[in-house]
Every structure is written in C-alpha cells, then in structure tokens.
Amino acid sequence: MNGFKHNSEENYIEIIQRLVKTVVLLLLLVVALIILNIVDLSSPKIPKKEVIALATEKKDSNPINTDTLHAVAPDTALLADEPNSFQIKYGRLLISNTSFYFGPKGTIAHLSNGMNCQNCHIEAGTKPFGNNYVAVASTYPKFRERSGSIETIFKRVNDCFERSLNGKSLDTTSKEMVAIREYIKWVGKNISKREKPKGTGIKDLLYLDRAADAEKGKITYTLKCKSCHAENGEGKLNPDGLGYQYPPLWGKHSYNKGAGLYRLSRFAGFVKYNMPQGASFSNIQLSDEEAWDLAAFVNSQPRPDKDLSKDWPKISGKPVDHPFGPYEDNFTEQQHKYGPFEPIATMAACEREGDPDNMLCRMPNVHNAVRQGVMLHDVLEEYLVEFSPVSPKIEGRVIATDAPSTLLTSVKGVNYQFR
Ligand code: HEC
Ligand code: HEC
Image (tube, rainbow, N blue to C red; front, side, top):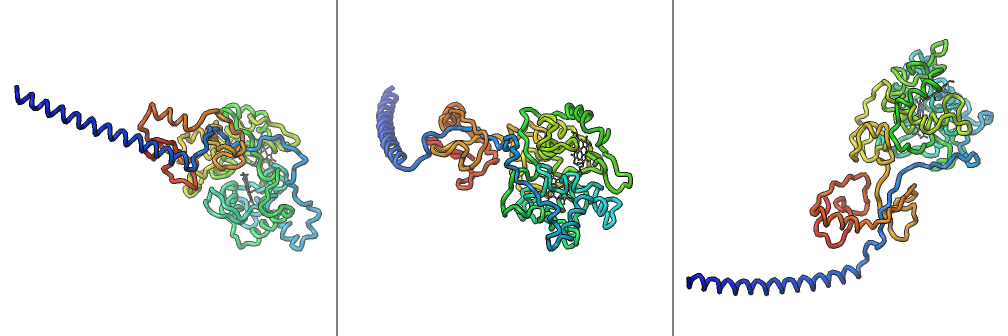
C-alpha cells in the first residue's frame, strides 16, 4: 500500500512538472505566433481581395462586321505586274486543280486523294472566312503545338497533303512546292508581319451548351448537303474523273483522322460560312447548332486513319476538341470529340485586386470571366477544416511559370505542401 502511495506522490510531481513544461511551451508558441504574425503583416502578401472567377477560353462571338473585314487578297488582275507572276499563277493552279497534277490520275505524281486544296480553301484560299491564306505569309514560320516545332509554309502545306489530302508530302525543292509558297505569299502580301486580320482562316463558333448531336446532324445532312455530297458522303467526280465536282465528306477518298476538319470546331466553323455551296459570311445558311451537329455526324462516319503518335508532344497543348487522348484533364475522348466543350475550356482562376476584369492570373484577354463573389482562400480554408489532411492532384492544365509545380496556392497557417 505504502509503495503505491509513494508512487502516486511521485506521479503527482511528474504531472505538475509536465504541466509547467506544457504551459511554458504554449507561452513560447503564442509569442512565436505573434512574432510570425507581425512578420507576416510586414511582408508583401497576396492581395486580400482574391476572388474566384471562372473564365472561358471562348472565342470572339461578335457578329461579323463587314466594315472591319481586312482579309482581302490582292486582285488577280494585278498579278501580271509581279516579277514572278508566272510562278504565282502556277501556284494558284496547283491549289485549285491539285488533283489534276497530284491526284490518283495526276499528271505529275500520284500523291493525294483526288481532292483539291481549293475544296477547303475556297476560291483558291482568298475568300473571307473561307479558310483563306491571307494571314499565312504574315504568321509563318511559327511554332505549332501539333508538331511541337517551328513550322515553315512548306511544312504546313505538306501537313495538308498528308492529312487533308490523305497523301504523301511534296518534295520541298520541287518547283511546284515553291510555286505554292509564292502564291500563298502573294495572297498575303498586303498584311504586315505577325498580323492576323479578321476574316482569315476559319471563324470560331461559340460552343454549344450540349454535346454536338450526330443524329440531328444526319437530318440536316439529308436536307441540306446530300444533294451534292451524296448519300454516303462520297461526293461526285467530274466526268473526266480527274477531280471532284462535289468533294467527298467521308469514306476512303476523304480527309483522314489527322486533318484539321476532323476537329469539330474546324468543321463547324468552315461549313457555317461556306456551305451549302454559295453560303458566305454575308449569306449564312446554317445555324451554329446545325453546323456543330453536322460536324458530329460527318466526323462520326468512317474515314482513313493516320498515325498520330508524334502529334501534340506537349499534351497540355492539345486543343479542347482534339478527339484522341491522353489528356491532362479527366474528360473523356468522347467529350473531347463531341463536347460539351465549355466545361473543358473553362477554368477557375483568381483575380488580383487592381487587375482589369479580362486579366486573370496574368493571362490577358480572357473572355467571359464570371465573378463568383467568393474569396479563394476562404473556400480553401473552409474545405481544409473539413477534409484535412488533403493531397489534391494538380491537373496541370495551367502552369505557373514563376512558381514551383508543387504550389497550389498560398494559404496562410497551413503547414503542409500541396503535391
Ligand atoms: C479537307 C480540307 C482541306 C484540304 C483539301 C486542304 N486543307 Fe489546308 N487546311 C485545312 C484546315 C481545316 C486547316 C486549318 C485551319 C484552321 O485551323 O484555322 C488548313 C490549314 C492550312 C494552312 C495554314 C493556314 C493558316 O492560316 O495557318 C495552309 C498553308 C494550308 N492549309 C495549305 C493547304 C494546301 C496547299 C492544300 C493542298 C495541297 C490544302 N491546304 C488542302 C483543310 C484543308
Ligand atoms: C450545291 C452543292 C453543295 C451543297 C448543297 C453542299 N456542298 Fe459542301 N461543297 C460543295 C463544293 C462544290 C465544295 C468544294 C468547294 C470548292 O471547291 O470551291 C464543297 C466543299 C465542302 C467541304 C470541304 C471539302 C470536303 O469535301 O471535305 C465540306 C466539309 C462541305 N462541303 C460540307 C458541306 C455540308 C456539311 C453541307 C450541308 C450543309 C454541304 N457541304 C452542302 C458543294 C456543296
């Protein structure tokens, strides 16, 4: 019994000693916290008014204003004045009658599927919003994510030979390739370097708030396209068989799965301002919905494959509507092909006090930023109270060039790093 009493006295002393130690430690901690806080206050910190905003990479949705159309190619009547007019004219012929020279019965070589460049680059690549070449000379050579390299005009032309014409590349030293380049340079001769005026290339359409619907597209196809492009999308050959009166939209003679038109946004933007034949930006015959649904229908039909293993070396550089994974996000190939694209293209970002509304996390020209009226730090702290500890997976769709990759955000008073 005594032994037990003795022991419990010792225990009391020990407990008191421990208590004193704890109190001292706590006091030290409080002092440390106060100091830290003071240090915190005096150092430059994240602006207080950080709010979450959602922004979409959505493209210019303004209706086309014909007054601001600058995508005007030079008048062919002026061609004769050019010192290399012969070369330019030859280039134009190669664009408008590609099949005659390089098709399955081509007079120079058999390199391509029988389509003409002009089938997709309307009026030999001069029509506003007709996928024209007006801004090619001004923007090439340029870096392209698809190849992960700086591309010349030659490389870009051969891309279309290999994909859109489902064929082989053209020798870059041939007089035909040089003529094509000289023609493309002439088409863009009025545009200053690095400029890309309105009306060049293909116009981006607004995303639908649903997935594009191939079934609906099929109905529109029957009503508005089948008369020319035929029941099975095979088009109609010219009587001489050297080119198409109506080019194919799918099947073995059409563009392959590596071609630009295989992306729904390219197809929809192209057909909206160019099809049915005769349509243009001032004579639109399809609604946005029809254009997207047609893209879904046509691009769900069979067509030639292409080895795409070397494309998009940087996965994060893939456009939202590239239908082949892997992706850096968790959306499926199905959604990357048909949409809805809005959720893929939308991201959360924070706005810093003092920045204009179209500037998020130092990204300029952000469209459709929507303020959520919430402080990013409040949300995270609230979340952490309930779910700590966490190990979130950083998607990596956005890369901060001036912060370590392990940094998610800088929330005060949290002792672990995000990895
Ligand atoms: C089946 C349709 C199709 C055919 C045929 C086609 N192209 Fe293309 N071409 C495209 C699409 C789609 C793009 C990408 C446009 C975009 O993304 O804005 C493109 C882009 C280009 C570009 C870059 C345009 C720019 O502004 O950056 C050049 C140059 C080009 N094509 C040349 C040619 C040549 C030369 C031929 C014939 C040998 C040809 N294309 C045949 C569909 C086609
Ligand atoms: C009156 C005939 C006609 C109708 C109707 C028509 N097209 Fe075309 N389409 C053409 C011609 C001709 C071309 C080639 C343009 C050129 O060479 O100038 C073409 C080219 C195309 C191309 C690019 C070349 C290719 O074959 O890939 C696409 C895509 C296309 N049309 C889609 C459509 C869709 C979708 C519809 C229905 C909304 C449609 N077209 C209705 C005549 C027509």
